[in-house]
Image (cartoon, rainbow, N blue to C red; front, side, top):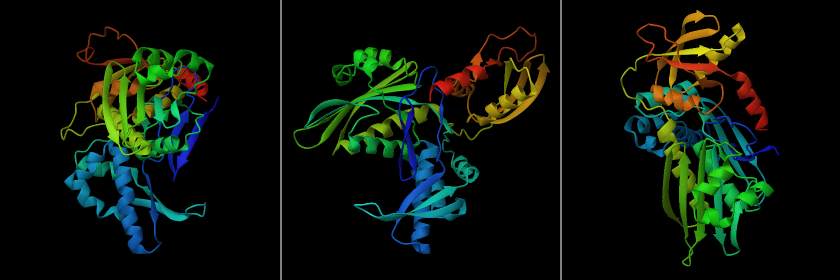
Length: 369
């Protein structure tokens, strides 16, 4: 079964089968792109659209809508055109509504610098994959939302909301294996044990479960539970309809994940961190390791310190804590922790030790498609 892509106005949400093996953290595309519907292509409408699009991007990259309340950021939003890299117009004549939209690409380095100058968090491209078990009760009864569901309202709201926040969301396939492991009652009761057991085949980084039900007064209530490694959180929301409830749930999950994974600006320089990585047998492997370390959001710079056999020691300039680095490494299979060697130097105890395992990562990447 293949991965299903659902796009809404250029905002992409991944919904469907995760595949077997260890799921990779998802490199989210389009974080620095905003899309806004415009009334015309005149300069006044374009400048206003730039500001709206920049707000979209800042929420996605910052991981929370709270960044828009930051005084430094709100002042710079008024000069959004300074951050624009390119833009283009698209027109849709599809029934029942036709519209013109502007797609705006912002310069990643400029956006990141704006967030840093405001001491706001930055959430990197690699983000945890969220497995979502969703039960809905409507006038037609209860049902579990799957990747093959016909509920366009719920699927559309999920795709749009996840795209707006840059969150990779996956739904179960609800094939025979899922049906034998999970019942509507499990989701309705938010029974974590059977749902976590059923999620094992998907190996997502985080698992969410929620029940959404319509009330007699025409509103909607939802109860949710989120499991992330050793953490379990839960709560309830009230909404005016199912679409709003889905948006509120996605916002809640995204806020909680961003709180854990976004790099927070401390305003102070962090001490460099030494990491020692084994199983680097070729120059190509060395180059791949260097690129991988550089791609991690908590890492600002990568400098090799020592090469001995298949072991390379690096000094990492850090923008996040060593614990946050470990969280990012745990999202995929490129590095695996290993015991350190007794080396007799002063930094041995504070150094982090890994083994380079690209074969495992590539095998799992192929298994997810």
